[in-house]
Image 1: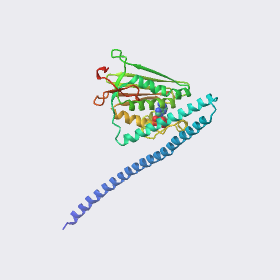
Image 2 (image 1 turned 45 degrees about the vertical axis):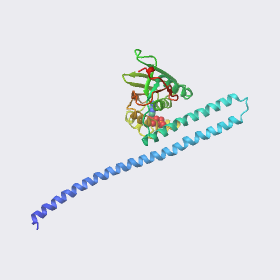
Image 3 (image 1 turned 45 degrees about the horizontal axis):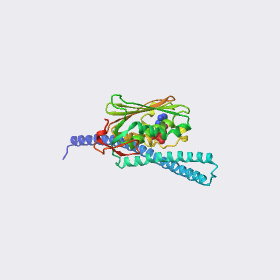
Image 4 (image 1 turned 90 degrees about the vertical axis):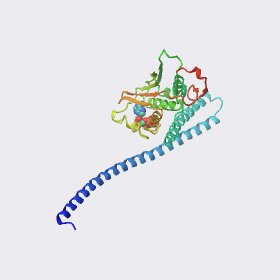
Length: 299
Ligand code: ADP
């Protein structure tokens, strides 16, 4: 049997414990609420993404079908009209292909099926081919893209670097596509690549709308898009930079941004050279894959 004093002591201890519990429960409640908020934010972003993406896939297909039907029905003498419709088809298909690559890559990353495949790649040629693919888009905004490749003269003028060309191509395409989208018209974009010890560095600089300091981190979040007004005019669904960041993580690379609102942005990536456990082939621009002689290795 407990004495009265002991009983009071026990009750005091229990009371203190339940007060502690109440504090803990309140804290957990707050945490749950914040998780809930985050979840519903991500649900909202997802459903926005789904409706957005439906437009972005359905609309280009409708244009491509309509335009190609017009071309088929055109007279041979309408060559100028035919050419301009073919250009529009190309531009729609190009954007569609790019968006789908981001979506499929995001899905592959999520499924854990995106491990890098390193091969010797002609970086200069890879970048040149990406820039030339974006030439039409840049011309539509009267933008000039300057590309310079600074390679240590002591090495060689061949620019082979062991990397995953498909992944690198998507990373650069995303940075360049954003540079074009968020540039003011009649300006220029600078693309510069160089080697820093065992890493490849690449910079894409635009003189566009820029990004506020407070937003520099969140632009890497999936589906996140800033500036509703400018973005209502631009295709995209906030997937590009999150895919870019994940691909860089997979290749042990990183990305830095220097940006000022109203002045422009500089995105700089750094990717270490991949190991040579994969194949011995080499790629010219991410599309071609040629088996080479390992004696030809430059680095
Ligand atoms: P998307 O361009 O499809 O919206 P991204 O993930 O590539 O998606 O970019 C996320 C957001 O970051 C963009 O919507 C835009 O608000 C901002 N952003 C990205 N690149 C730039 C840039 N070069 N200049 C200004 N804002 C940018």
